[in-house]
Every structure is written in structure tokens, then in C-alpha cells.
Length: 161
Image 1 (spheres, rainbow, N blue to C red):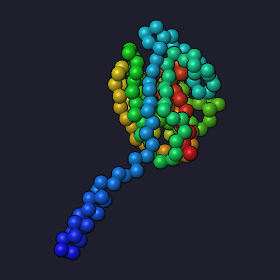
Image 2 (image 1 turned 90 degrees about the horizontal axis):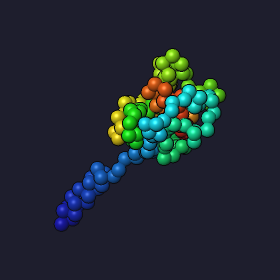
Image 3 (image 1 turned 30 degrees about the horizontal axis):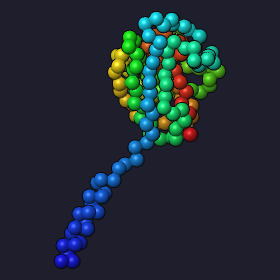
């Protein structure tokens, strides 16, 4: 009988080992939005312009702006009814300089080191996607790099501590 209890105890411990959840990191909900079909694109809403983003015709809303270092999962939804959007994660070294922007293409230069650490690309209206990255302490920009969107205010800042 003692042997039977020992077997059941061993099975129970093994089951608990497999059932125990692993640390999942931080999950951030991300909403990609725009003002709809009547929006007017602008070019003065980049990070270095220090704009009033409440006046931006499009943007990125996140569920939390400060997270601990480590694994971060972005659950991204394009809530636009008309426009394709994406979300790119890049390091922001200096808010007064912003991200490297190419005026001729209306896009951030993702070829620069640290400017594209990962992305949820080309989401059609209503679509969603996710991205998991391991982030070190620092300041990051989440931005849409569809032509003209970043300069129209489609970015936000994430602080990792």
C-alpha cells in the first residue's frame, strides 16, 4: 500500500511540474487608429517636433507606457475602417532628434541600427497580429512606417525599466 501511495505521489508531482505556467512576460495591447476617410495628412507630428498628439489625425494607443525589462508581447489591432497600418519597434536614443526620417519617401529609415527590432506589418482594417521581443532598459518608439503615417503622429513612446 505504501508503494501505491508513493506512485500516486510521484504522478501528482510530475503532473504539477507540467501544469505549472511559465513566466509569460509583459503583454501590451496596441490600438492603431486614424480619424477616418476625411483625415488630413500632416508632416509636423514627428517625435522631434514635440507635437500635441491630441491633434494628430492618426496614432498608436498602448495599454501601458512603462514596462519591466524582458519579454514583451505586443497584441496589435488595426482599428481603422479604411487604412492599412503597421507597428514597428525601434530604439529612441534622443527625443530631440527623433527617428531617422526620409523626407522623399515619407518613411522612417528602418535600415539604421536599432530602428526596427521587430514589427507587425501591413495590417488591413480590422486585422490584428502580435509580436514578442526581449527589451532591455531604455526608451523605445512604436511607430507606423506606412508612407506619411509617422510624420502624421502615428507613434508612441515606451519606457522599459
